Image (cartoon, rainbow, N blue to C red; front, side):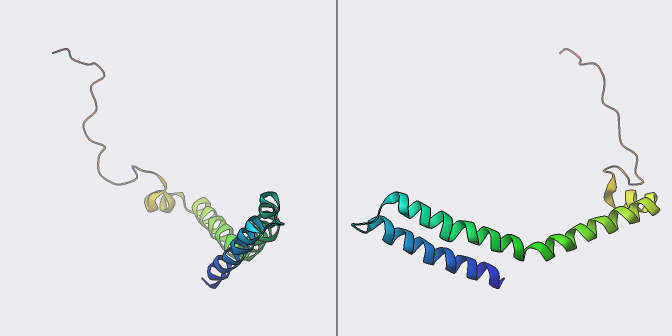
Length: 102
């Protein structure tokens, strides 16, 4: 949670720097874009990616654990929602293959 607050604050500061670069008499819009990309967006994307590594690792390990459990007991995996029609009720009335003209 705190990472998103820090990221938002960092982008706020960088956007103010970009605005100052674009509106300065000696500044340029190209300099503002470069400031935004290389001082704000690029480093922030890298930091957020690195900080998200533990969450991605946990999600990958959980998926592997689910796959291993499904490989050991396929009936439990299908009853847990692996297949859409894995319940004990019948499928219902079949649909007519021909269309009747009125």
